[in-house]
Every structure is written in C-alpha cells, then in structure tokens.
Length: 420
Image (cartoon, rainbow, N blue to C red; front, side, top):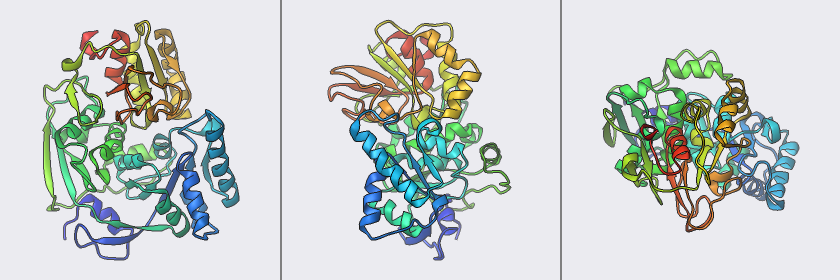
C-alpha cells in the first residue's frame, strides 16, 4: 500500500503493519520532551504510577524555557522540581540557565530531533519538528510520564491533508505568511487530528527554518502533525546541527491516498496578519494597516531563529521604533543570540530602540517580559492570539512575520514593509 509521510514514519517505529488511517498502533519513541510548566506534572504522574527509572536517560529532554529566568517563587519551585528529577534520573539533556533556549528551536539546533524520528512532548508546539521530517506531536503530561517510563506510546494513525503551495514567491512573504494563509483557509479545526503534509514548488524552495516555522503552527489548524519531506536541504541542515551522515530522502509514496488536497498559489500575495482573537482571522496587512499598537514581540518557537532575526534587522536598520511603543526582541537560543551579536544584529536592534531580552518564551504565553495591559494591542511573531493570551483579557494580539512586526514597530501601528 502506498503510504503517506505520516504512515511511513509510524511504520518504521512499530512492529504492527500500518494498513489504514484510524488504526491504533504502538510505537517506539525517539525522544520525550517536557518543560518547566509541564515537567512537574509529568514527574508527579511518573512517580504516581510507581515508575522508578526512565527508559533511557539520553532520550528525555527537559527544557526550562517558559519562565526563564524564573519570574517568581512559583516558577522557581517548578524548575526546582524538574531539576531534582533530572539529577535523580541522571538525565543527559537538561537545559536551564545559560545553555537553555526556547525548546522547539533548541532541540533541532542540538541535533536531538531529526528525520524519521517519533517525538512526543508535553507542549502543543512539539509539532515543530515535522519541519525536518519527524512525526512530532504534543501530548498530556500523563501520557508523557508513561512514555518516559516505557519508551513507547500509542497513536491513532492520522488521515492526511496534502497542502501544495506553488507560484511565484513575493519578496516579503515568509513561511509564517504561508501558514497563516492556510489556517485562514481551513480554520482552526480544519485539520483536527490530521497530518498536514506540505509540498509544491514554493515549499521545495523554502528554507528549513521556514519549514520549522510552518510545522510549528500545524496545531493552530488542529493538526496532529505538520510534515515536510526530507530532502537535500533537510540533510544539509541536520549535518550542520549535530546529525551528520543522513543520506536518504524521506517522502510520501507515489499514489498515497489523501483525505483532501489544498492548493495555494502565492503569486502576487502580500504579507498577512491574523487578527484578534483567532489564528484563522487572517487578513492582508493592507486591510488592517494603521491600527494603533503599543507593543511588538519578535521571537518565540515560531519566529525566533537566526533567519527571523535577520529579517527583522533588515527592516529596522537605520530606523527608530515609534515613540511610546515597546519592541521586544528575544532570540530563541544562546546560539541564535551569539550569532546575532556576531553579525551586529543586536546593535541594530538596540540602536533602533528595541529591548533585547534573554532566550525565553516569556510574553508568548503571557508569562513575563512583555505582558499587555488593559486595551493594549501588540503585533507578535508568536503562534497564538487567543483572548488574554499575552496579558489582559481586553488586550489584542495580531500575529505576523518578523518583517511585518518590525515594520509595525517603526510605524507605531500595524504596517507592512511597503509602508516604509
């Protein structure tokens, strides 16, 4: 039977024969992930079920990224619980402090996830790793605890929506725009428990970092996973990030059966924004330009990589952030931060009047370092704009690419780069 990419990866991790969508299969996992919010819950469940040892200390990753550096006593205690567990279990991949970064940038960067892997994480944006051809998905902390003990978990084989993106890619469009366009077209539940499999000429030309950005937001369409075929670009990226020696491409079989095919032509398209309060409320930036804002956030597991920093710096260079607006820039890992420093991007940000912060999730989840007050609006390169997501219940968040976010910081309102 010709297999979709999702079916093919799951088949490689189970002793059962994957015959159809909807089938329940037991799979071996390549990596289990938790963070400073979800880790303590998983640890409590792990101990509650009577488990004593993790299945493999090298295949657990605990990343203290959401409230880093810890913002209060509660968040400090959360980290203490996780740190103690990591010490007890001799966990190899525990990240806190100066070597810690936003988990979904950090793990591909460190070579801990790669093509053909099955990865589960106690964080909904674990689907990011589909950008490099991993079947990666978020789960609840109890399931994560069981996988930490057993090294396996069950999946219902998802049906697949094939997304073909073609056309002439405009200068200012990025992966973020492409994904927002898709979510706007199919809705926040358009891919509920389905695999999104991406292809087409635009996807072939897209950078691996652009693919990671798109896979990150598969969950915003309800997707179980977002998957990109493994090609020469993927293998080159992995070779540069501690996963050398990959020689095989990985793609769906010719003749694979899809539940649905969505075709998108980007020719002539302009950058878009997702307006409050849903990632599916997508409009061309020209339709909402001049909407006043008080904050811009550039960073997160969606858009905190070095290519995102370069895009933002290109727009900001030689310009000033609007008065009475705070523009917060958060490179997502220490490696990205140091590369920004090396390339002079940090200086560009600071000369423009930005606040450059540590490698944290921080404002994305309304955690810290960028909370919105009553009635305030922000343009953010993050992944969610639900009511109250970044602070006050009366605040508003517009999701956009780093290019649009930087242009908006300069204009003091929602703006595209053409307005500058």
